[in-house]
Length: 559
Ligand code: AMP
Image 1: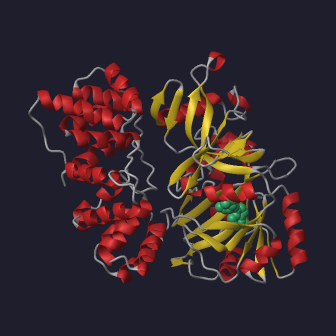
Image 2 (image 1 turned 180 degrees about the vertical axis):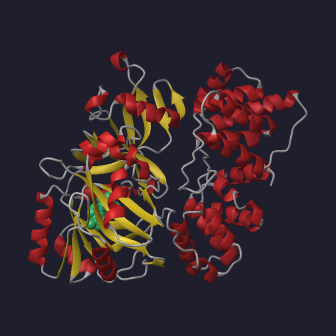
Image 3 (image 1 turned 120 degrees about the vertical axis):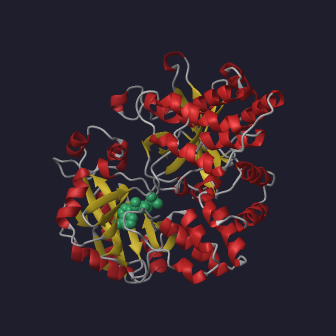
């Protein structure tokens, strides 16, 4: 397909803020796609692979500026000046391509296949001259591009498409295009996406318009799935009311979620952000091989850090660096040991366990895991209808340095990707949020060159709303924790706009923050401001879909 057609679709989508209209525009577009156009489904959301694929384009604004400069014959300095003026590299590319087009007549036709092919080469490049090769792959595309094609190419490269569509819009558009917006179909499409995490795969099936076929999208060991999420209740009493008596009550470990797949002899570990982190946890691979029976399985677990000497559990922030660090792994394994607590099972020996009741799944866990505390173990659990026993267990969990407890309905199925009312978390008020960094300011003086003040945002459906500015809790020196230098390095490639010392940052980096109070505030788009927010940890495992929502902020404010 001509890339121009896709660019025109993007343009039409940006032309309306209304969700329903966007869905209709997209639905019409999807109807005319052929089977061979399936990969356009990735481009629609500004990507080149399904969400879980590790290969990322990795193109910064700076690199895109160089490519625009080359393709349009404009000096880099001029491109930067335009960027500061217009605030959007897409518009810069469009404007400069327009200028160039007036002086040259010849142009090639750009296809979506060519765009995907060149963009997919980017993550493969390694070694000497990588930067130059990247620039020339991008320049090749931009040189053949029409002005609006250049606009959306540039935006795709920096990961800021700005057309206001999300996975949910694509799902709804599929339902509208192929099933006449049938409610049942929307649900089935969502379930298929939550299991496969691949919009192109689901598109292949949906376009045939057969509901039954969608049900066949199944789990695949080795391919990450979205995990089931918990709702919150205030106390044990309310918990019982919601999940029924008796129920299972488990420690809510203060760690990070690891989803463990075994496929033949291979063990693969994923975070809830669908990232493969197998290399970071060689000891977990070993525990699973040694102590878990079964040819193939998917286990849902919480990894929690502990002190090797005292055997006391440590808070998440003490071990969070294990998720990201790709070097010194043998050393980290010793200094920051973790215990795997298995709390659910999604697949076992060729059979999906999704529709089995929790009671049965939890029994299966106990059957197949040889319990080895401080290595791998079923999570601590009681099954009770006695409120007093439940309260005691809750107290014990807190005394054991854990966050609280989870209360689980015994008959409930496993629903990937859903925040369900049959698995509840109970924890004391702790005044902490998981937020995303959406802006920052460069420091001055001693802190020159570092980003030192960070704009934090919460989520409201698919939008991010600002809720405060934070500078404390981050360290000047690397060895004391997460440093300004480290954070600056992470954030710089995500800069999409600069103005003086302030930058706008693509929402990606999720952090845990504590605060003293929530106030109403007209200064931030959420309508709230955190007083004295303080950084506690990076949350590289948490996807944007799971950060604190505006509703949760409101609830905490009312409390
Ligand atoms: P939150 O991150 O506050 O939404 O709490 C839910 C998280 O608690 C889950 O995503 C898990 O990572 C974690 N968790 C810890 N212990 C358990 C458990 N026993 N069962 C389920 N989730 C648990």
